[in-house]
Image 1 (cartoon, rainbow, N blue to C red):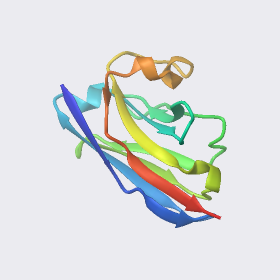
Image 2: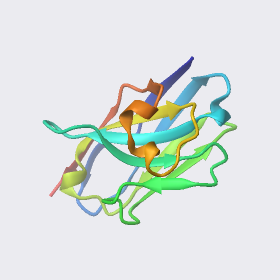
Image 3: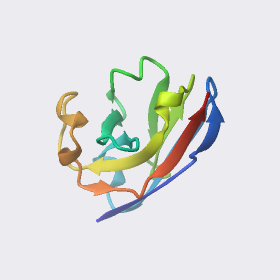
Image 4: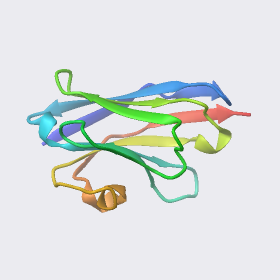
Length: 127
C-alpha cells in the first residue's frame, strides 16, 4: 500500500514557476513508476509526466514542450514536478500517481495503469 500527498500548488502569474511535491508513504517507493496527471474543470484527467524506478527514463505529455521537469528522490520518498513558463491553460488540479508495473512511454500516459493516487493540489495560472 502506498499513500501519496501532493503539495506546492497555488496561484501564479503566467510565465511564472511552481514546484509540486508528492510525498509517498509505504514500502518500496523506489520500485514504483511515478507520474503526474492533471485535470481541468470539465475535462478528463490528462497525463503530464512520468519517471521510471531508477529515474533513468522520463516521459512527458506533448503540451509540456520542455517546460516541466519531473524528478524523484528515493531517499526522501518524494517525486517533484518543476513547472516553468506556466500558461493559463496549465490551470488544473495536479495529481500524483504510482504504478507498480513496467510502463513504456505509451502505456505511462494511461490513468488505468496506476495503482495509487493522491488527492491532488490546485494550480491556478493567471493571465
